Amino acid sequence: METVVDRLRTWDDPAVRYQARLVLDGAESDTAEMLTRADEVRTSPECIAVIDGGFVDPLHAYRKWQGAHWVLVQLAERGHPGGDPRLEQIQEIVFAWILSPAFLKPNWTRHIEGQPDRVRRCSSMEGNVLWASLQLGLMDERLQALADRLGEMQWPDGGWNCDVHPRARRSSFVETVLGLRGLAAWVKVTGDETAAQTLERGVELLLEHHLLFHRSGALIVPNWGPQPDKIGFPIRFFDVLLVLELMADIGRLDDPRCNRALDLLLSKRTADGGFPMEVRRARTASEIGSNCTFAQWGPGGKTRTNPWVTIRALRVLGAAGPQQ
Image (cartoon, rainbow, N blue to C red; front, top):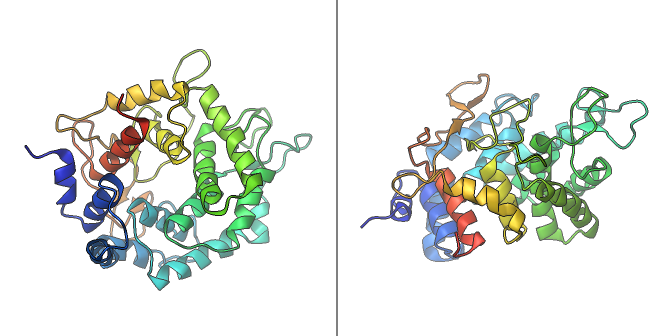
């Protein structure tokens, strides 16, 4: 009988087929087969459309969701194997924005009088650039500044927040999870001990809340974005799958405080053994538009298997062990 993994291996998008072999089958990336598959991904219409879009509006790197910042993220989410010189050009657009002096001033960064330890910053920005750059093989010494910045702007409880209201005294999980994903990738590649300490403080904040829940047991529901018990894709900030992927990245899925989130993820399995894109976070378009993407991301809906979500969910469950 054909399994959901069998279907992923023969999906009509070469990036899905590549990821199925690489992530789920554990294929070595330097074999003749996988090098051929990597070339198919680089030349696929979807990846070309995303890359081309990164040059359409270079003055607005953070344009949602088609600016250069999001181009790097979406290519990384598609598992682009790197090796395209245009990726470095897009990264340069991102560096010109995120490393500019203006980025450390309002509106990107805000300092509240009397709260020097609670700098208001959307740390998902630094986190995304770190993670996506490293996923795409774009190692650059300037990434160190982003990792350092996350440490310098970490809130006392271990996370980050961009809420401009002085009354905000606790971190936002929406901002925190992507900051930590970027740091996890950076620490893995560099062994940066200072960044590792920043990462550990943030991870402990998540684990104290069993990844998704208030201490009362109720689900954490941010003021912005979909509820985190719903899997959103391809643009992500804070949901059950993303936070479990972070725990898989750092080898912490064996912590019993992950169990409730793992059970929630398992409850979403579709009839054919896959997992759904419950919230579509970007509309596919061929032109610049609000909340748009240049690529196709597969079927949505809570009963339909989405290939990208399924690959990630199966990786998490595999890392969690046979009990899952």
